[in-house]
Structures are given as structure tokens and as C-alpha cells.
Image (cartoon, rainbow, N blue to C red):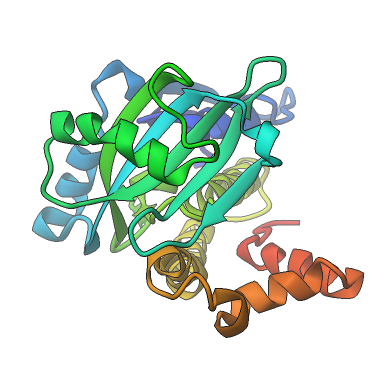
Length: 284
């Protein structure tokens, strides 16, 4: 029976995108419209962990947790004075970090994600922030030179659900898999999940496919995480703290490739083409 009533639980950005795609899907007098119900994860009633436990028991989310402590801080600070662009990564054995623009100009709003010592409390990490900023950010800023708008310590994981389909329940994005944030593959993989799941649901609704395509969705998206997202994102985070920053341009194959791509348009095109392998359209 074609899906006409779809419930999206834990609807963060990926869930909202799926709802938007389904809501805009063309219908006809011969087919029932798709009805969408959203449960917002931001409400504090995030059902995703409970759903995974119900579906898969104690092995609901196999994988690993990184030993490294991550802190995400949102700050108002003018990094452009030092030539910063939208995103940059810094290799260092202690002060490894990423700086990404969230908004601006006129007022520059940035995300600074950095590594910290494990085993510290929230208050201890917050107390250490001024010294970390002074050590690793341009201009060696002191409190008062920037405005701290957000502070979120968290642990990062590499985890994948045993399946992304159980009967009529489908998993996508963070409900199905997690990875560390360096390189943006968690968000990217979630968006591609949603595109693929929409293809499948729309194809079933329109009579172009049967429900077995949902098993293909699960197999393909899990394989993409295993073969691409997990190893590439893991290399991304290790790259920041696991090598000599003074020799990285000579010894790190990926950084060498990026340096070549800066000067060679053909190599840049090849890198853009590689990014497309995360995508797969499930129905014509």
C-alpha cells in the first residue's frame, strides 16, 4: 500500500528537509496526498535513542566513542582581520581546532570547535576556554576581545545502526549513524540519506517501485557510511592531532592533493566529482 501517512520523529534539519520534500511532492486526484506528522527533537522529547533500543535491543548503536573531548564555542570575533575565510582547520598536538563562519558581515559570528583534555567537567572546560583561545586564536584574544555566544562540550562517536529499515520504520541521518564533525560528513550524509529516502517513498507512492526498494535504501546508505563516511571522517579528525604540523604539507597525502588542486583546475574538478559518490538516486 503506498505511503500516505508519514511520521517523522526527532525532526532536526534532516527531518525537516524530508518533510519539505514530501510536502512538495506532486499528487493527483487518483492518488491520496501524503500526510506528514513531525515530532521535534528540540522539544526535549527526542525519541531516537528509544526507537533504536526498541528496534535493536542492547546493540542498538554499535561503534565507538573517541577518547578526545570536543568543545564547540560560538563567538563574535572578527577573524577576517587575519585573513580567515569560511572554514579552516589547524593541526596541532594540543591546540587542534576548526574555525567556521556562521554569519557575517557586518557582525562576524563564528564556530570554534577544538580538542580538550578528557575527564574535565563542564565548568572546568569553561574555565579553561580563555587560555585556550589566547593560545590558539589569531591576535591572542583576551576576555573582552570576543563575545562568547555558546559553549557546548560533547563527545564524538562513530556509530551505525544495524539496519536503516525495520518493517515500516525507516532511519536516516543522526538516527541511523554518527561521525565526528570534522569535514561535515555527518550533515552531508544525513542530507543524502534524506534525498534517497524521499526518492524511495515518492517512487512507492507513484507506483514506480515497491517496498523492497526500502531495503535497498538501507543497504546502500549503510555501505556509504561504512566505506566512505566512517574512514574519511576518522582520517579528518586524526589529521588534526596525530601528525607533526611542521611536516604535514610534506607527509600527508590529502594535504598534498589539496595543495595541488589549488593550482590545477583539472584536479579540482576530479575532487568535486569524488564528492558525488555519496549520492545515489533510487528511482528515475
